[in-house]
Image (tube, rainbow, N blue to C red; front, side):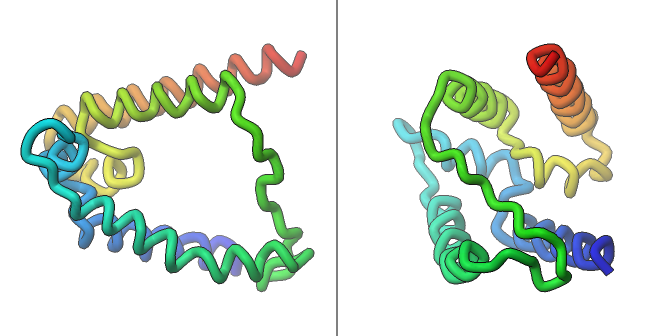
Length: 139
């Protein structure tokens, strides 16, 4: 049941990204172009997503188990550190260069554009590098 729920949540998320235009690199780059022809529509999408998530997160903080009886796992770290800031900057630079966010990249992977494939491969390489560095750091 947990895998089915995860699949359903992922499909809803993916459809939402597609409907919001997050899979269109030109729209994403228009949002990031603050000095030019700025497109605020993705900011509205982000605000709507935050608004939709506020009540469920407030509810989740008060629970010890999820609706599927798994332990509730919410982040508890709230401070900004070099790793968070550096990772955020790296994520933002990659997003700005490619005009593709990781979620929509997976949604548009089958579009046949070699650039999306290259982006996904680079994203996977970055995830692997992070995993290796985290394992080395923990040892």
